[in-house]
Length: 603
Image (cartoon, rainbow, N blue to C red; front, top):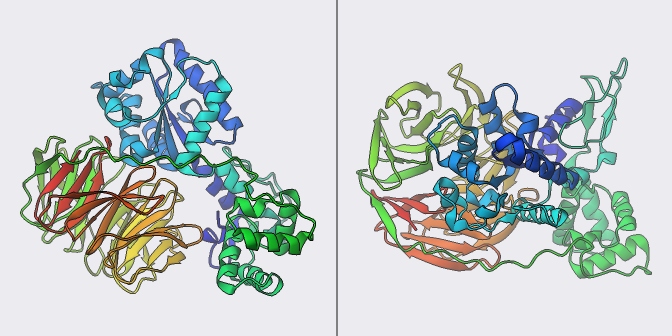
């Protein structure tokens, strides 16, 4: 968490808004069937409470299902980092059933689309469900190959809860409560000059936040981030004789872990002498820093005081050699998405959208654009939005094959679309701006100057609610879509950046005309890994499982990358021209779209 990502132009944010930020997201969404006489629901409720006791924040329908259920359900999945699926025969039947209004079916289908199988953890609740070969329908298709947690009985309850927690953390990283604990509240100043009479502090329902007597005018003021970093860097250079480049790196690491001063660092080290080991400081520098702050008589452990990280599992790539070819478009394929009903939607230079079933049959063709269609996105309510080189956004009703709304305002081609949690649409354009659209009022509510000097080629909604953009100016930026404030800039690519995605551990992956893929730490903006192997433009990336990334390129290949080693694990060939876009299906098959005018479903 970085306070300055959320503060306004004056470095301030109301206490109420700060608490609201902490209360929106959760670590896990629990999807389950209540069972006969609520038997299964009571068991899941017990698991839910145990997870909360271990610091995992949860979305659980016993607590959340009031009012507009569908809206709360989709928002809960969107705002959660992992979906835990409690497998029973009844749950499986409901998901595979024909009742379009069944909550189990709705939850599972939406979770597959938004999170994919890589961010879904199955928990078996019945002995007969231990055999995954018996998992039928969508549950078997998406999760049948996943390693599950066995809760068919409650023997060893605590160890099984620990297993769930361990698996969840492996997927998402640190729990939200842990992130909040690292915030240096002592360095935030509370401006109460305008208080007339204190009122009870606002408290977040899901997480514990330090409370402060506050009025609506209360603001939390953070020291300027540049000053904090400058002071830390100066201390490292002058007192410990660390080279400036490493000093800046260490300063950023400390700030990201809630330590904004040397005095704060000293207090941390007094409580835990291996604190710097835990946050991956260099061993030699760490010893010098600790001795400078605490004296020479300090014994350090070269191993972390935190539990040892599990060994990295070997990445195995399933058989993707077999494929289905989808023919119908007459020109380049520019974009692909999987719809809520699990069908595929493609957009093309031939000015059309096409809807395909998973067997490769084209079921619908949508016409209306007057130039190439480049971007496509499906909203929570099922409406499909498309945009492209005619600088127009069209909103489609798939039941009638008709355009029900159009939006204009950009001064050039629209290359990308995504949506905010509140249902508003965001478009990015060659005119270098982002626009936020309200589909209810059919108006552009905000025009954001992205800070890019050239076209915005791609944009995504990050888990924290901010927008990440990739641009022809060789940079990526993180932008607050509510204020329009540019929060961070990532530099390192040497040519146009064509795509960005967020991977399972929270980092972002970018692909570029410079042929490389870069993996970035969102908090520090540091590039952790450069993937090299493509011989021409790297175009698109998707993550198919923890530790494995897939990319496509102008070199007509699809590459599978091991994110631990940076090595190529597999290469697929077959397309006869530039592969421009990719899609990961709910069953972890990979879909590619090419300038050869075909789409392939691999695996």
